[in-house]
Structure formats: structure tokens, C-alpha cells
Length: 497
Image 1: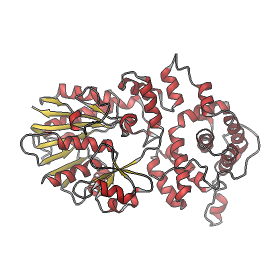
Image 2: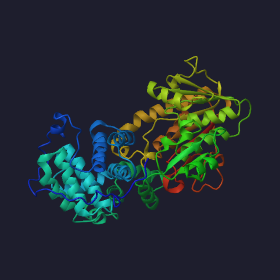
Image 3: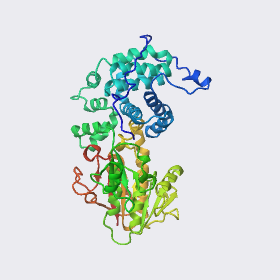
Image 4: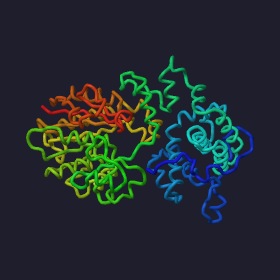
């Protein structure tokens, strides 16, 4: 991900423009964007500057097409030919707007005098971008308003006056003043207050509070961290790259905890030779740590057959495959999605990894997945992803509490399959990128209790590097962005009886 800018260095940030103070409907006049240019066979050039238009296209794709911002934006930047500061500004606007959508919508509802759901979607997304600039960047107010009105003139021409009026109302208060006006009091409704102040759905704030033992100070620090731009972490594959040398080569720094981690200062990691050559890959340090814990946990008996039961898209398989290669072992990587199975195959090319496109729950029924066969098994279970909201900001608005029953049922089934797959005395690591107690402690405890296979918990804390703070009382471990600088990865290790 490119290093974002606050817009103050963008030469187009204070371009003049504006609109008439007119009707406040915002619901008509979408028209055909760039229709005249397209009919004339000329490339479409929006009235607004390209970084803002690129950000608008990415935000629109997320809300209109259920796209993922981290996939949509790079393609748009390439299409628009944006690099350097322009690409950084577009990146900041896109991710910032997606992170703060909930609070921006509450403010826009008040400023417009109607619910944002009643505003034409293209105009709504443009207003979100404008409000983000006004409240969270150093872009001058007149530039944020005029550029957004220019954008509305392109995507919803009949709503320019409405947009101008709404944004001038938004500009009348700073972010703190809007929170003071709209958020419920912290004293009487702390969850509601934190949800609006830090732009998270209330059910997620409540889940974080439960996982953190009700410590609202810690919850606040976590919410703040979720709204920060996350660093890019690289994994130097053991036996193929030295992390210190890789850090020097890319202008980064070795990680604080994982022996394979490199913190990338900025730039596009996909352009790095080490990634193109398969000597490193992009992977959050927390993901590296949980894979490292499974691979290094003490084990009696044979240790050459490893299994990754939910392998897509292949980051943990890449690390485990490189570690297995050093020991003369082999990893079987299972992925139920055909597309993701291909990604795993690409990610593990050249490593001793066999990729199976099948359902991991078929252990014992599928001859390729025999029971009591593997020495170490990783279950990186599908989950809500609440631990990676800083990297996938739109997911906080997509996930719902109603997603949990189906996910937790799948998690229990996969963990039961892993316990069948591992040999007596072997190890299973259950991992989720979520701190929700239903997906972590409840799931792993229930699955172990119901399993016909006996298994005991192994204290996971000694399996992580010494000196890591805030690992709790064990035997499971919960990592946190605000404590460890990682995604909120949960780890439980079980040894089959």
C-alpha cells in the first residue's frame, strides 16, 4: 500500500470551484458520467482532479459492487496512471473514508436533514469523501468543499447545490464538536459513544469490550489503532531470505517479535524483487507468529507430515512450507475454494507443499486426508475478520452478528476434523483473525469438549518470543493491534491424547 498523504502536499488540493446553493434533495440528475466524451470517442476526464476521482471510484466500487478496497484501489490507480503523491492522496481518501463511514454518515444525516439512505448513492459517496477531507485531513475547507462539488457535478449534476449546502454545514464544526453533538454521553452509554466517536458498529465495540475484560480504556486504544493506517509487514521465508538483509534491501526494519518479519516503510511491496522471486511475501506479523508457534512447539516422535487445513490464500502455507523444507518435511495445504487453491499453489511454488482442492472437513472420508496421519495441523479458520479491520476497513460495515452462528459451526467442524487428522501426540493449532470470544474461547472449548478424540491444551505463551507483553493467563493467546502492533490473532494449541 502506498504511503498516504493528508492532501496538504497535493497541488490540486485548493483548486477553486463550487456550486450554487440550491435544492437539498440530492436525489436526481445522475446522468451519464462522461457521456459526451465517450460518445465523441475521447478519454473521459472528470471535472474533479484525478486523485479524488480515483478515491471516489474505489469507494463507489466497495459500496455498489461489494468490492474490497485493497483490491479495487490498486487497479484504479493503474488505470488512472496515478503514482507518488497523487496515488498516496487517493489512498488516504479511500481508506480513511471507508474506515469512518459510520460516523461520516451520522454527520451527513444531521447536516442534510435527512437520512443518508435517501441520498442518491453516487452523491452520497462523494459527500462522504468531502466530509472526510473536512474533518480528518489538513485540506483547506474551501478546497474540500469546492472539489467535492466538482465531483458531484460529474457523478450527479443535479445535486451540486445540495452538496455545497451540506458540506458547508459539515464544515461548521470540527470532528470533536460533531461527536459532542451526536454521540450519546460516555457516562450513560459508553458503547454507543465509542461506536460513534471511533466509527465502529456497536456490536463490534461490545465484542471488543468483552474480549478485553470490560476495560474501556483499552477498548478506546484498540478503536483508535483500528483507524490508523497499518504498516506493511513482510515475511522473509526461512532458508530463502535473511530478515536483516531483506530489511536493508527494502529500506525497512526487522520486526519486533517474529524472527521472519520485516517492517516496510512504504511503497508498493509487489514491486520488490524478493517477493517476485518467492523469497518473501506480505504477511502480518501476527500471522507469522501463530504459524511459528505451531512449527516450533515441542513434539515427540515423527515430524515430517504437516497439514494446513484452511490454506487460502497461502501466506501461512508459504511460511510453513519453507520451515518444513528445512526439516525435510512436507506440507499438505487444503483449500475448499478453487480460486484460493490456485493462489495457494502460486504462493508455495518451489516449496515441499501439496495443494488439495477439497473440503477440510472430509478428514477420514477422503483418502487424500487420512485420519491420525499428520504430526502438526493448522486450522486457520474462516471467521468474521474483526482482528484485521485496520487492513480491511469496509468489513466492519459488512459483517453482522447474524454471521456468527454459521461461522462458529464451521469453525467447530474444522477443528474436529483437525483433531481427527493429527496422530496421537501430535499438535493442532486453532487460529482466528478475530478476538470475538464466541469465535475464540467458546469455539475451541466446545470443539475440544465435544470431540471424540481426546486432546489437552498446550500453554501457547512460551511458544511466542520472550518479552511479548500482554499475553494474558494462558493457555491460549490473543494478540492485539494496540498491544503488539499485529492483527488481533487468536491462538490455541492442543495436543492429541
